[in-house]
Image (tube, rainbow, N blue to C red; front, side):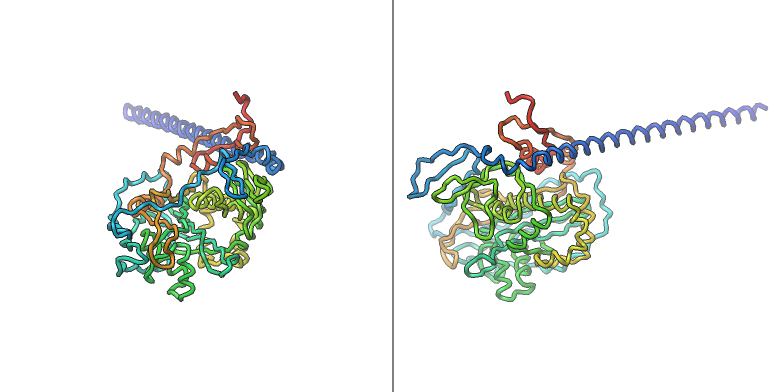
Length: 491
């Protein structure tokens, strides 16, 4: 009887403990569902508010251009018949004069050999899935060391150390050419953006290469980077223009390119128009003349009637394809480095428009049409494999990189050859190695946590839509934000 009583007591305790655990687990699950729902609702409400705010003011974007334009101030410098006008928000126009190179010979000294830069490892985000299936990539053969020490009066740099790849990455070189509007029909790739897609983390990095980089090409020669593709095409290099570009990029920067996409001006215009135009936050006033093959944006104002010079003020605008070309190409009061930043922003805008219109999801069926305006070796199978990443890509996982003049590069003028006397930029090996190492890393956990917060941006100025401009810049920096309209007070 005693044994039976003990057995019954133990059974009762097990039942009680099991019942408690059951309700505890159920309660935790319920709390988790409620917390997740709150987060989803908050994120949806922020996006919904942003879309409503943008839509409500879309019709007024163009009409507010004149009121946004800052007052003109005559510079006091009289350049013949052209009056120079300065604006408070203009991007500073950096000097293009080369720095003097030490040494009595007047020639550049040899660049020291690049050692592997020691950079602390970036913490891997906690939600990284490292069990993805590797994507097959093209075979690449290593580039040999240069056999000469000096070309065109410029020291030949040693081959760069290979940047380590710790993730499954697909590197695609996006190039834009202006060959259709040049008098000599020369193929120059003035736009060069490396897009690195991390298929493990689901992130994207973009890095713009300035066209005036003066690099070693294994033909061998030293040329501007924007001429390399055309040289490879003209001289029948193995793999054509992209084959020579791959070897050049690998030699000078230690980065392997897997695929490429090349589009001319009219092709880019067609792409922008196909997605219904793009919304762009212009965070700096740009001044320039009308450009061949592009249209001055409707929002631009004439600031010099005699010279027919236009200024696009700070604001939030909807651009057609031809207007987007003017924004992406202008350098009147800017430079090549800033132009690269604008071109990255335009790519973001195209991606956002294609996603919003549903055309990104239909990309496989539109692939044959797209390849009519884009020359590429990206196979359709790869597009299908990367499409889930593109459709689910969060803006906090898109990072943009650019070179800083006089830090990543050194201004230079070759003393010999076809580029003698021209202003170019010599790559600085060590800072570039650090930049490309960071370029290969996914967003840090701190960046993702920062993106988890939501910042409301209010407009405390008299300039319409500046909250849209500011919130867009914050999102580019990895901070989740939305435009909240006019501030309650402008004091």
